[in-house]
Each structure stands twice: as C-alpha cells, then as structure tokens.
Image 1 (cartoon, rainbow, N blue to C red):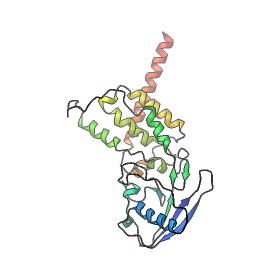
Image 2: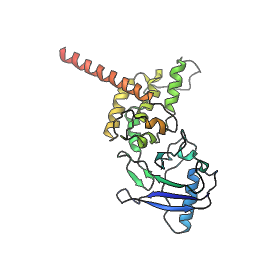
Image 3: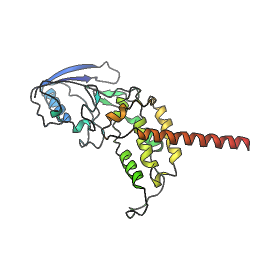
Image 4: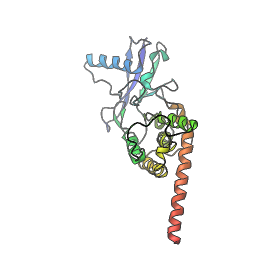
Amino acid sequence: MKITLHVWRQPTPTAAGKLVTYKLDDVTPDMSFLEMFDVLNETLVEQGQEPVAFSHDCREGICGSCNMMINGAAHGPMKGTATCQLHMRSFKDGDEIVVEPWRARAFPIVKDLVVDRSALDRIIQAGGYISANTGGARDANEILIAKPDADAAMDAAACIGCGACVAACPNASASLFTAAKVSHLGLLPQGQPERYRRVVEMVEQMDLEGFGHCTLYGECQEACPKLISIDTISRMNRDYIRASLASNQAAAAEYAG
C-alpha cells in the first residue's frame, strides 16, 4: 500500500507547529497504525531526520497511551477501537491520512503527537479510590451484588483514560472519563462510604483542570474505544446534585441551630 501521511510536527510546547507530509510505499494491510509509524520513524532515522514523537505502551488497547486524531476522529475510523488496535486494512491504497494530537486546553502539547494528560490523573487522585481496607481476596459471592449493578460497574471500569472523550467533545469536557471513574466505584458496596464526597471532589477537580462543561453532544460516547455510555454522566450528575443538596441542608441546619 502507498500511504501519504500529513503529521503534526511541533518540536517544543511553545514552538509553532505544522503538518508535514511523508509518503510511505511499503505499508502492508496487516500493520497496525503504530507499526506503520514505526516504519516511518525508522525511515526518518535512516535519513538523519528527527523521528515523530508519539505515545504508546501496551499496544493491546489497555493502557490508553495511543492517543491520535486520525482524519479528525479520535483513534481513527473504527468504532470501539484504540489507535494501537487499528490496522492499515481500514484504509485504501493511495489514501492520505491526517494525524494530529489531542486538541484541548487541559492537554497541552509536549512534542509532535504527545500531549500531557496528567490532568486525568489529578481527577483520579481527587477521589477515585476507596478507603476501606479490603484485605486479602474475598471468597466469590461473599458480597452479593445485583447483576445489573455489577455489569454497569464493569462497563464503567473499562475506561482506559485515553482522553478520546475530551478530544472528541466540542467543549473539551472530561465528563465521560470522570463519570466512568465515579460510577464504577459508586455502583459497588465497597465504594459507598465516599460516594458523595468522591463525586464532588472529582467534579471540582475536573473544573479546576480547565475542561469544558458537558452539554450532552454524545461525541464522547462515539469516540470512546471502550464504548462507555453517556448514561454514566447522568448518574454522575444525579449523585452530584444529591451531594450538593445534602451539603446545603446541613449548612442550613447548622445556621438555624
């Protein structure tokens, strides 16, 4: 396959960036998108040029590092597929492909296609944990959990924190990511003690990081490589409202008393 790439090159966070065109003549349909980039970088190194910086780690759709905007779509044209699992057979011989980094104020560009996604880590640090000492592994079914709740918690826990939801959202909102992390703990018995404190602290941290507000466009759901539903956002909003009302009632009672 012959492929023409238009790749965003930006040597430093403050330098001006631009799309640079590269032509590859020896791409095979069975290559993954990242393997195709490996070929490009080997060619650039042989020519004495700077290779393209891009993020990757497990290459198994688990770590969420492989963040690329491909022809304007987060992770490319295949629904429910991370960039590392996208194969070149998804494209045609002679195609031109534009590859850019995530675009969001909360994801500053580090170099080329690499962005700083540590804002998502700080949202997790704000409340994405439980304080209960879980000890050793419990016997199966010792804690009974309703099947719909267990399924919904597992679906939310599939979030790999790649940031595609942010990149796809017109408002650059991180609501789907935050809602997934809030939901997978809030649906389980172990996550109940901090349930309402968690949602308030994680939503407040999300706002502090500069992410936009959610207006339920639904683009995040379409771009998510793990197909996480925006129903989790509704659940997060309900918990946030309940926590806010309880806080206001407690403050009113203290004032009246």
